Amino acid sequence: MVAKRDYYEILGISKQADEKQIKDAFRDLAMRYHPDRNKEPGAEERFKEIAEAYAILSDPDKKRQYDAHGFEGLSDFRPDDLFGGINFDEIFGDFGGPLFEHFFDRYRYQRRRGKDIEILVEVPLSKIMTGGSENINLKRKESCDLCHGSGAAAGSGPKTCDLCQGTGQTVASHTTHNMVFQQIRPCSKCHGKGSIIENPCSQCSGMGFINREKGIEVLIPPGVEDGTVLRIAKQGREGPIGNGGPGDLLVIIQTKKDPNFQRLGPDLFYSATIPVYDAVLGTKIQIPTLNDDVIVKVPSGTQAQTSLRVKGKGLPKSHSSGHGDLYVTIDIQIPEHLKSREKELFEELRAVNLDQSSSKTSWFARLRNNHTKAKSG
Ligand SMILES: [Zn+2]
Ligand SMILES: [Zn+2]
Image (cartoon, rainbow, N blue to C red; front, side):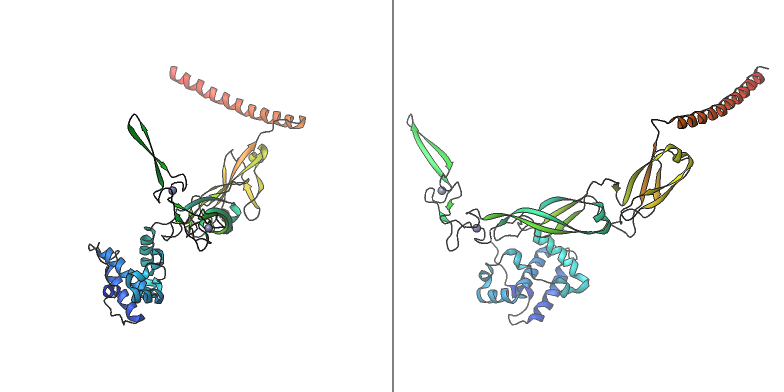
């Protein structure tokens, strides 16, 4: 194993360097070795080393520990803590802050964190319209805060199992026909863990974790699309003790089924049924939207399944300004039972049409006859 280099040496400063000198040294080196700018081999390793050195020396508490005890003095910090406190925006301004944050996210996420939790949240259209928040109840295992995940009551700790001497296994042997058979089994006393909690924690009964239900408020951006994943940091599963911390909560957005509207991106679809005479003669109909009702003009001669567009009455667009449209799809209702007067009128309508079409037919017939005559003659 390669010995770790001294943090002061890495930054090229003396142990007497003040806060500003530490920061200046870091800024210069970080700019030079940032992996997005420096493609030389080893630049990324060098950058991590520089950042680690700065993370320690810029934090008074960590610096004191390091000055007094060297690397040994930092062993109590969780790896995740080491990089937690750097404010990149403050050091680099608008110029490099986000770039560095991004790099450190990548770096942090390589550590063993707890698993992410995915949860599907159905959001009603009215909330997608305005934006807002949804409360979700998250059930998850949390490390027990009373015993810090050890499972043992305060002041005690897990004891090495005396039956298996901490191996977690027991070996049973028996002799048959002068042959010795060995069977390895998980230890019956410690259930294979190798240690026993004699004095279990009262809060978690020795499990080391507790099932907690937690209410979490999720902010819903206006116009959020189906399948959008909102990442809420550190609300996922707990990581291994002393490691990379909890995972994230991934909230997957789905539009809740609506009795009136169907959604496609920012556009809404509404189905309206009108009587056959309204489709023929034209009419005006009142249509609900997510805000208030609108009057939609149906032109005369409208065919079934025609879509009429109501501009700007859809959902907010998620990637640009403005709103989608509302499409009103027209269904035509054919009467099933006619009153005698209605029947009369429909009969009359048919008679008129028959007259027209028969005169048309005879006109075509005459034309065809003339044509045939002309040809033969
Ligand atoms: Zn045992
Ligand atoms: Zn506990």
